[in-house]
Amino acid sequence: AQSVTQPDIHITVSEGASLELRCNYSYGATPYLFWYVQSPGQGLQLLLKYFSGDTLVQGIKGFEAEFKRSQSSFNLRKPSVHWSDAAEYFCAVGARNQGGKLIFGQGTELSVKP
Amino acid sequence: EPEVTQTPSHQVTQMGQEVILRCVPISNHLYFYWYRQILGQKVEFLVSFYNNEISEKSEIFDDQFSVERPDGSNFTLKIRSTKLEDSAMYFCASQTGLGYEQYFGPGTRLTVT
Image (tube, rainbow over all chains, first blue to last red; front, top):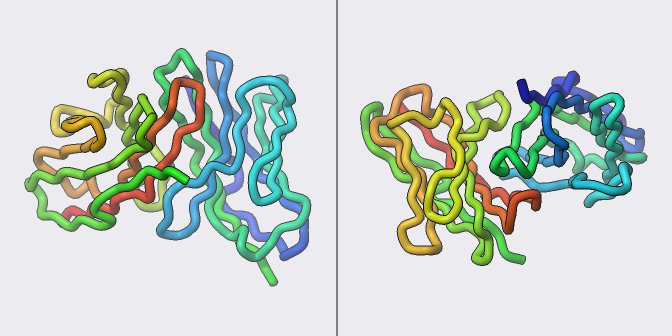
């Protein structure tokens, strides 16, 4: 079955520290991979996406993610976290031959300590 | 920058009532979606829509749900007889083509009492 797992429900990091949010997927087809961010009461904003090519992708707000096919992972990273990064982060997968629907992980809530 | 809009931002309704959630996708997009997020849970796919017909629906999308693109700009989700468990945030999304990113609206919070 198709699924996305974000093992960490809640992560707290200090401002200025590095961040890595984990995402593992199980998907039969070649996946497209996405990271979305959701601030409280807001919609989903795309941070970055992987379709093909270079497995290290850069996104907005200084985020990057690396696709590792052998590990079925697409972890999100940021070298130095800012207080404004506190939000909920969702990993999602989709595939061209699946009608476009996205399957989301449970989300990881990020808190940032001063 | 073009964006997906949704109205209303919050809808309160009584159990058994019909509700219509409205979305205006980005104008040159061809694929449209509805997702929902029950409080504290993950975002779930409901339905996709292309070329004026449903292309895929989840098991959540039963006979109580319907979608329509009545005038070439709006995209609506109707729930005929709401249940308490329909309380959720409903997100509309649109996409230029398959394999491209989906742009999400800000959501409509539906509260069924």
